[in-house]
Amino acid sequence: MLCVLSLLPLSGCGVQNRNADDSEETVKIVTSFYPLYIMMMNLADGISGVEIDNMAEPQTGCLHDYQLRPRDLVCLEGADVFLANGGGMEDFLGDVLEAYPHLNIIYAMDGLEESDLLEGHEHNHEGEEHDHEEEHDHEEEVNPHTWMNMELYKKEIAYIADALSEIDPDHQEEYEANEMAYADKIDTLIEEYAELEEKEEKPGCVLLHESFVYLAEEYGYPVMETLDVEKDSGFSAKEIKDLIDEVREAGNGVILSDSQYSGNISNLLAQETGMERYALDSGVSGEYEKDAYLNSMRKNLEELKRAAD
Image (tube, rainbow, N blue to C red; front, side, top):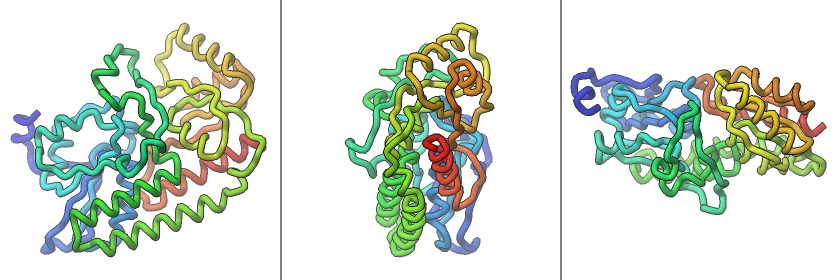
């Protein structure tokens, strides 16, 4: 990988957001994937001298099985900070540190307490057998999709703003002001759906993506079962039958699927079990817009509201 890196031109990344004149010295911040880039779009908004890049394209989705490419390492050339999620999301960080041993890495999940985190489980997207304990070490029991809980997301934003202020003290006041402004927007959204959180009668849920556990628990929706349905096709007849059986055994409730997939499997599960199906956004892909996270979560809350009516 390092040999290939030395042969490539020093350019990369899927997107760049530059807030500086060409003559101005810049602080370059690279994010690992889409949710963190949206976060940085808000934290670095209007700060002259700060450049933000994103490594994995927005259509990549979660990074559980992501394979680091030479151009990803090129993307990190000249970076002052690499913003990662943590919690086992970026299994490729060993290669990053080998290429750039002195790179400052901020882990968003370091801004959370252990009590904030939910249990995770192994991801096996392609039907391959993995030594999960070997790959994830102590992180294998952590669900890393913490941005799906808005209160935890705010904690991460505050932590990252503080960490950036230490690395880039010249822009401390601007990071802090942007953090407060973004947190205010999130609080406004939370207040807008306060009645949903307080609603007593809510259906049990079968989740087809583990990220939704954070959202379901934040708003008091009982989680009956969480299944790994992170692809659109390629299921064998036995796998489909097993999924149907698992959903039926979970009990009466609703199915919450991930809108980034086609819906073929979730629709089939709904038809076979008689459950209503609602599509949520796991927030791992979309347009590069400052309010993308807020818009995604508003749609999710609307779906949860429909499911409870």
